[in-house]
Each structure stands twice: as C-alpha cells, then as structure tokens.
Figure (tube, rainbow, N blue to C red):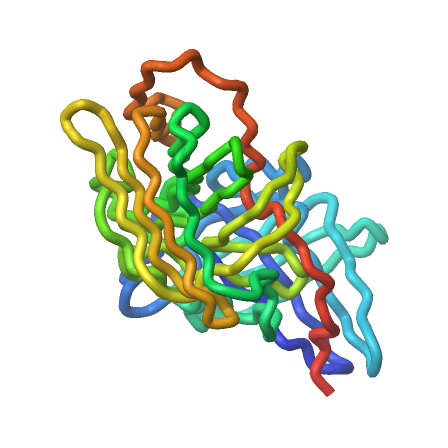
Length: 304
C-alpha cells in the first residue's frame, strides 16, 4: 500500500502503521479497509505477511515548530471489520494502546502525493539520447510484484548506455498477467492504469518514479530529470532484440527522447527467475543501483 507523505499540523499526534498482508483488502477498487488479522511488529522489516514493519511504524507528536518520533520494539496491531487496535511497546518502554475505526482514505492511486514542489531537473535544454554505443547498451528490469496496486506489478526498468552514462530509470506499472513490461506505457501519476509512473521527490528528498540520469565514470549521478509526461514503449522481436523508446518531458518542460536497440536484455521475476534473457555478449558486471538513487534537500512539511 502506498500512502504518500502527509502535511502535519502543529500540536497533533500521528500514528503511522506499515502493515503487510498476504491478501488484498475486500472491494479494494470501491472502498478501502485494512485486511483483517493480527500484525506483529517486525524489527527485521521482512515484509512478511501479518507483520508491521519497524522502520515505518511510528508515533509522531508535533509542537509549534517540529516533532518527536517514537519507534516501537514489540507488540501487535489487531484489525477487525470495524476496528484497528494498536498495542505496542515503544523504545521508551512505554505501552501505547490506541483504537481507531477501520475506515481509511484510500490514497493508493495518488502517486506522488506529499512530494516536494518545484523544478528539479538539471537540464537546461531538450535532450536526445543517441544510444549508439552498441557494445555498451543494456535493458534490464526487475519485477517487485503488486507493491502499489492489486492486479498490477511494479517493474524497475533501466535503459543504459554505459559508455556515455546515459540512463532512463523507470517505474513501470504493468498488468500482473504480463511476464515482462512489454507494451506502450503513458507517463502518468495514476497507478490504477498501466503506466510509467511520473518522477518526483518525496518529502524526505528521495527520487521516486521515472527519471533520466547522467552518470559519471564511477556511476555516480551528476545530472537528472524527473519525467512528468510522455510515453515509454518496449518491445522484443523474435530474434530477441529489444527496443525501448522514450519520449518524455521533464518538470521544466524540456523534451527528452531516445531509442535503445539491443540484444542485451533481461527481465527478472519476483522469485529471481530470469523470465527473459538474450545476449550474444559476455555478461557485464551488474552496475545497477536500484532506485531511488537521487536525493534533494527537503523542506519543512509542518503546516502552520
């Protein structure tokens, strides 16, 4: 479940729960409730079913200027049809017993909610990526499952020219029936659709979604542009040659485009099984740094 950052009010209390279930909430596309069950606090953040992840389960109490976080070390979250009951022990050794109705605002389809506003692209003009270094091109994708929405899988897809350091790093949301992210995907902020999800910076300054990156010889980011609109098209022919075409605009209105054609293409499923892999070359050392890899300085999110 994706729940974008929220605007925090002063002199208030917020309880954030990071819950994992092996089943979808009932009537997910109509109403939104947390699936029933007992969720045990998991300090290992394994994301296993019926756990509450330590890292993002916290109590946040604000004052006029900032706030204080409390993390938890043990306990449970019990969910029934009508009630969410929290019984957690904090790292301050206090026990927190909180009850709330099991009736939530569904923010699943609001990709980028709470993100930093402004123009962040480092580009000063349009960019055409040539992708003409045949021996240094790669298209690589990993499937992270129905992380954002039931019925669709999130793919991290990378289109690289290692010789020049040009990379399109894409969050592609594809129908769960697909074994690879093949097709034409509009660049959108709506995870209810098949799409390449728009690039943005979250409230902590981390880059999320689809970006163009310029990398130096050490594969450090030296330039970037969040993609805000356009299309991404990926195809693979009978000979195993893949074509990835990007036509996009960044947050400054610059046009970015490029067509990568290569037989060095790999798509990997959730269980680390290679769903599709073709190459006439010796496999290169994997230089991937899984997104998000870019950060900008966030601004205060506390609302007066």
